[in-house]
Length: 228
Image (cartoon, rainbow, N blue to C red; front, side, top):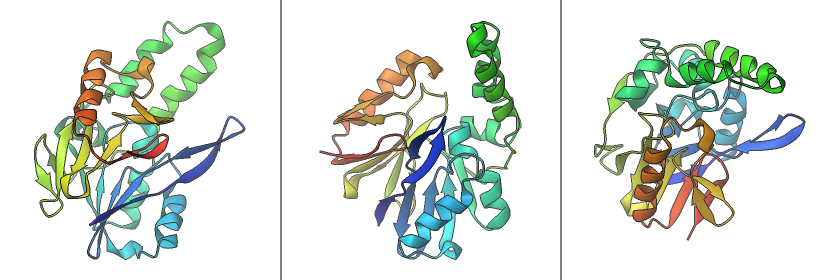
């Protein structure tokens, strides 16, 4: 088994930006962790193929949490690769599948009511962005402490950024895929977007949990991988 970082470059507000989904390779089976913004399917496909892998071997898509930059292309992936298994925590699955209003949307709508006038345009855009995300049924829910992917990956509950956020720990690789429970800032790990954390205290606790694993490599969706 190995983990491959997939750097996806895009433009945001006229500036170059990156996200870093992860690809887990186990023999001939591929598992993609998070799917980027809406419209990012071809970018991620291109990066996977550039690493020498066949998209027809994509078996699973694992979602760390509900945010537009993580589930934005999930519907497109499922439509193109219908046999793929969609995995997420039970809490996140409710929002992804459309059974409940996603936490992030409820938060964005609440924040909009108190935003300064100069931020209103962004606030309305963000709410609409979240509302436009297409729902996808989650095929398999995963739980804290569960071993998945041929018993080589341990699911770690890392709430705070969202309530059902999960990260992935690979003891044999001494590696962690953090999602947004940790982002790379230079040579250290910090929490992502403190102002958008659903629970800042729990986010800090989750970051400590990941740091206490003392892994050699942390694959962060924002900032890229960090190796100690």
